Length: 112
Image (cartoon, rainbow, N blue to C red; front, side):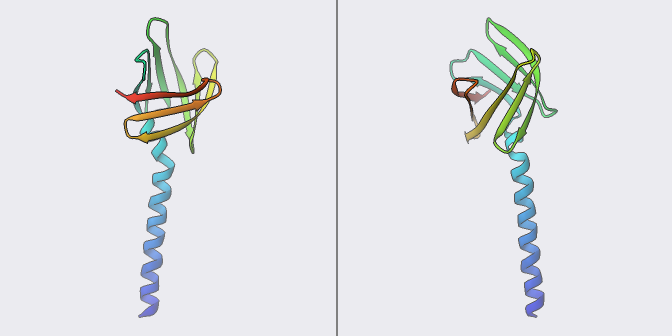
């Protein structure tokens, strides 16, 4: 009886661990997918599930690129040949913080 109970506990722990790992691996990229607008409403970023993105800086520039998310790091490869690496943080489901020396600090975006 103790062996059966121990087996069930181990099975539950393994299942919960697997769920945690799968959720942690995909959550940052999944949260990033969508359209984000900066706090000044002058820049818009759209991240697609397929690893591509578009950007628009109103009245100035627009373009496309590819991106990758690993842990808390976003690597964006712009079509212009520029690559930016930033730490991503989601203080809530509708706010994105991108922090990078290349960006001059932290850029704040809101989900559109």
